[in-house]
Image 1: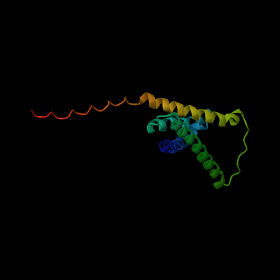
Image 2 (image 1 turned 120 degrees about the vertical axis):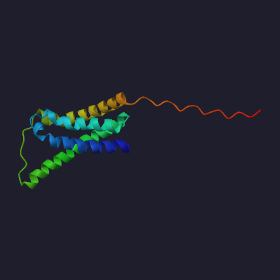
Image 3 (image 1 turned 90 degrees about the horizontal axis):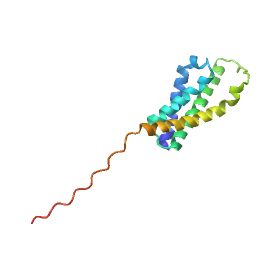
Length: 139
């Protein structure tokens, strides 16, 4: 479980870096918002070599939850520091279904990451050779 928590934290950091680097592209389309945590979750599950679904889902959901929390805090802190009021926004279909789609894509990312680990896993090592027989008695 410790390995999956480490993978989730590193995945959230990677997702935040991807979000900040690709900020100009992500404002062009609302659909691209799901890509950074999805890619980061799959990548960290693969790099960490998590081998069961439970650990993959823990890492994936941690990546998504921490990513959303940190990016939300950064955006609200930006409004606070610049002394701007929070802009009002129109509620559309994407706003309503965003949490549901986010949870489903986190589940899919965990599953795909585990599938990649199992496909790319090196072959099993050969069993150790049997022990040598005892030395023969002199005649």
